[in-house]
Length: 344
Image (cartoon, rainbow, N blue to C red; front, side, top):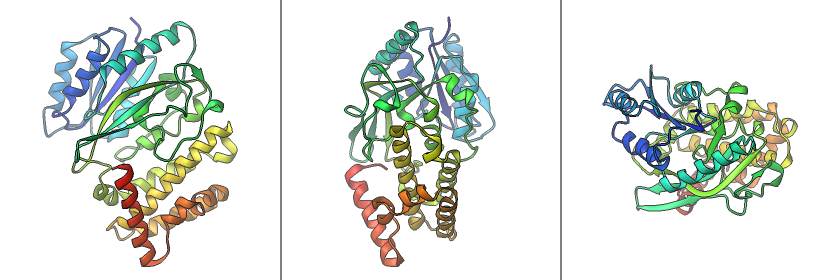
């Protein structure tokens, strides 16, 4: 039987979490034979991840496949799953996250129905939920009142995205051929590649479908997590690298139509530059501020109009206040915003 969707699960020393992730997909799909799970063991050496991957594949050979590779980082594991996918659609579920079973059943029903009708949807969008470990609270990120619900639509029909409601990887399920046909690439051994995944393919998606269901569940707040403040500050060089790749992917004002999509992508990039500005100031790396200055200079040379939008707008101004006092004020404003929004 042909597969309606492939779930790629990047795993790196994740034996503690991966069972819950895989089980949630199997249960939500009711063990249907038209789904596929590819467990990508990204060179795990510290626990039983490789053995667990093989055990799952042996238990459900018609649904689950295990792929073992040398460690290449999250992006490489995502691309390995994509390369081996046979499903019409491709969704990444990180091994320490999981999906809501009822929501998954609804998404699969909609996928099957749209394919049977020949709708040729390029991108399915669903809500995701931050599960905060520190205070045991939840924050649902959804797109009601922004996107038409339950039908196929184009970018010209979308509304305005608030700063707290971007389309992150957790929300997206691409048509597999969209990613393959564009020669999609994620750099190895690099964190924060999910920003590329959630941004660069969008202009190649013409037909979208949004389901107002809380599908993806994402833990946030664990020590050592990639979005932890200290971790992000220590990896600011990788954040800058990802932002540079995004910058060089398009001349947004020239390349991206319609205007609603362009506006969304510009606002997302504004946030990326603000993140680089804040965490460069939080970082202990001696070269952090020099790297930030080069990024701003290169953006100015690459696209002066985008530079003005990023640097002279409200967010760019407030995250680049001048001098030592300005830097302290920028950090204080960021931490206040974080308390209100809880984005890491």
